Length: 464
Image 1 (cartoon, rainbow, N blue to C red):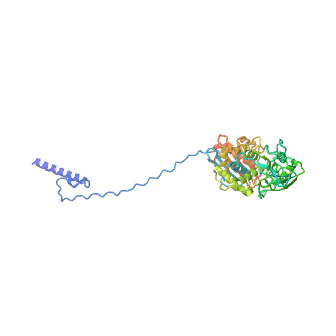
Image 2: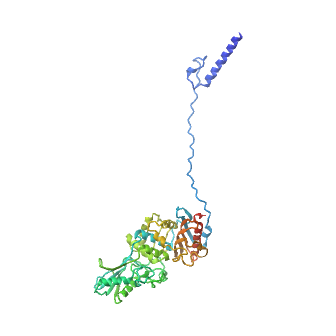
Image 3: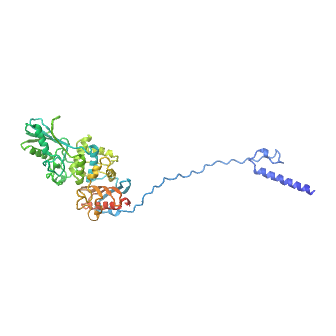
């Protein structure tokens, strides 16, 4: 009897386990797996609802990798606050990488003074080429015994005798033209001379220029025919300039022909026979002569020749489109640049410092023919030129002597300096500094001081 009871209990326990096992697998097993002891009438548990799929939240995309830049600690902020700098603008760039190290209004186009001559020179190299020479000719006139002296834009043509160098070393000479003309005329005596200066159009004076530039000896009227840049003293850089440079050239030519010659202004006949010709120094040389002492006449000569060669005209208004077209070769945005002349004497010129730092990177690399410009730049403490004077890079600023290659600029409303620095740490910088507004002559020393600061800082120059 005990055995039967025990067997019954075991059967119940086994049955219960089967039921619990079925419950645990409900909804996942087929109906045929119902545990023993259950009948088909026993309700089948309802399947569990299928979970609604959910889309996991999108992970945020990784940000762009941060490029580390050197922590620069050499500041010239105090020097930039020097009141002698007036309305101060500047930019400094690492010439090798193009990184802007220092910027104060670098994108604002402002008057650049004689630093504009760098743009004129770059356009001349692009349009004319380093080997271009301006030609002055003598052709047969319409009357017997008459010749025409035709200006070809060479403002360096000299009244001094061949072998006697004027201020413009290597210039062509009028006596050479006279000798050639006499030989070409043979037995026919030259009795009259017409002066043809029509290669350049008028006016011969840019309206925004101050006439004192002429009387003080810095700028002649711009005519295609003249001698010695219109100077009274052909050997001096600074000399009062003629009010009638065409007449001055005619009188000097008549003297070379013997003096008893009638001289008048006229136009050469079309197709007239060429009796004589002389040529200027090549553009590459003229650029160097212009930049080293900031010669205004040469800069205007180059600008006007660029305009004529470009086909934009032969007047002051033709210079802007011609020079900008010439600068296009260098691939630098010229937006905002205004060019009223070739020398930078006008207040109406406007060039951003940032344009100069870019152009000087190419000049420093001697791209194309731009090495001609670098070779003409004044050098701080150098043997000659506008940075060799005793008031430039003197005293403590002499630290930068021999390391700053730059074009100077000065007009009544500002002083400028732009070029290349071989910095103390071995890096190479390009820079442009403007001190504009109501500034005095001591602005030059303030410019030298901050430029020396750039030299000392080198690639560690901070923009703070």
